[in-house]
Every structure is written in structure tokens, then in C-alpha cells.
Image 1 (cartoon, rainbow, N blue to C red):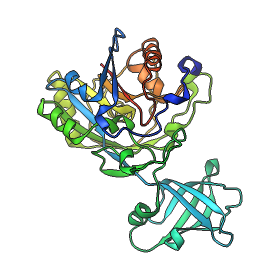
Image 2 (image 1 turned 90 degrees about the horizontal axis):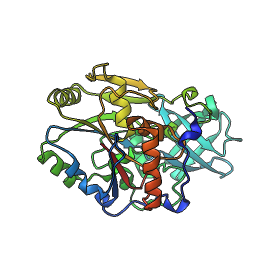
Image 3 (image 1 turned 60 degrees about the horizontal axis):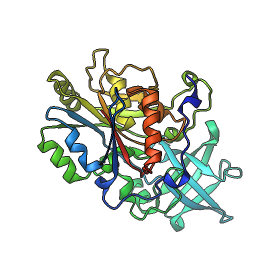
Length: 341
């Protein structure tokens, strides 16, 4: 299968630059994964497509305000940091730009000296290992000085950074939001539970690799990035009981899907687990646990679009995307949603 098989034309004006005031008022394209039938709804209508006994699985990761703007000590030159991985209490792997003159020993100041970074070494892909100096808790300093690391296709300023967090986010560690979950409100989740739908949470810390383009012609030659996940014994129990009682497992987002398909046995049972996953799902993958998917609209030729195509078929998904473009749906992180049932 070729990467080019997942290309589609998207008018730039359909890329959502800002979130809607009401999370649940996004549009919702409901797609039959087997017959390709399409309905046009709003996200708050999702409750009509869920049944008592189903299990809704959400990713409760929380996005780090991981973008820092500072000044090179001694010259005042502007330097931008993007935090990637925490190596120890004070050491992080970061992407920085411009990076040409940021060699080991160089220091960068943030917030008038509230946070100082010293560059220790250069590692793979030109990333740097840096050591931070600060008073108090790093998380508090980062919360004060950091900005949300919005995807590169979003150029508008985010007025309220909580809109790039799901309302149920709990475990900080992501460089990007699990955007399918941005449409849920506390009220909608309460209504869903009241209907008898089970809600379970997994954690997958979304890395910047989620935006990495596929650079190979043949899909199967792409090397997927790794991301850290956790699924608790309680979550596994809720999902397994729902399956045993005939309920559907409805995954919210590609990140939740990757966790479930990583830990599921061949029979679909999931277990408590924690670790790194680099699972790459693309057609004709056979799903072990996930029955349905709630997701946003993804970039052309992306691994996310390939995963979505696997739960239905490439032909059905690409036709649905063509319909979404025709109907002027809003695309990508702050855009509208799709329910593949």
C-alpha cells in the first residue's frame, strides 16, 4: 500500500485555527464503517449513537505547557525550547531553534532568570540535553512561563490554553492533545454515564512524532514513533466486562486505540500494563478490541489517517473525507469530529 493512497486535497481555509466556544457544538460526521452510510450531526448527538452496556475509552493525558521562549545569556538572542522527554529531575531532552550556535555550555534564561537552562550535549536529530536551574517545583515554573505547543498548522494565538486540554485530563506528560476528546463536556459525559454507558480511562502521552510525516513510498516501511502508555487493572476490568456482556468498545481517538490494541490479546481481552508502544495500525489491520472510533479529521498521508482507514476501509474513509471537504467541515486539532460505527 502506498503513502500516496492516503492523499486528499484540503482547502487551507478548512483548517480550524481556533476552538469553538462550546466544545460539544462541533459538527459530527457519523459513518457506517461497513456500508459507508453518512449522517451529518453535531457532537452532542453522539449520545444517540451509544447504547447501555457500551464502553467509552478516553485518554486522560494532560498537555505540558512545553514551549518556552528565552534569551541566550550574554547576547540576548531569542531561543525557543520545546520540551520532549524528562531524563531526570532537572534534565530534559528538548528541540530548540535556532540551534546552530547553541552548543554545550551555552545558557538560556527564561522569565527574567526564573528559569535557566544549560545545554549539556547534542543527541539524535539535533535535539539537546539541557539542565534546568530554578527555585521551587519545576511544574509550577513551567506553568507560569510555558505556552501550549500547538501543532504547526495552527497559527492563531490560543486565548485560553485550557481549550487545548480535555475536561478529564489528569496525568501531565503530552506534547500534543488527544484531540478527539476535546469535544466532550462534563455535562455530556454525565449524560452518557446516565444512559448506562461505561467510561474507562487509559493514559498515553502524545509525542511530537504524531505530526511526523511519512517519508517512505510504501506504508509498511514507515517506522512509528514510541509513546508511553498506562492501562490500570480497573480500566481493564471495565472494558473486559463490557465486552463479555456484549457491549461495544468505543475508542475516543487514535491514541486510546493504540493503547488498547497494544495490550489486547488475540481474543480481545485487555490487561493492566505500562510501557512504550510503537504500534503502527494501517489497512488491512484486524482489530482485536476496538469496535468503534470517535476521531477528528487528520492530515493527508498521515499515520493517523491510515489508522482510521484500518477500522473501516481506505475507500470508505477517503469518500467520507471528500464529503467532509464538500460540506466544509473544520479539520484537524480544533476541528469537527467523526464517529465510525
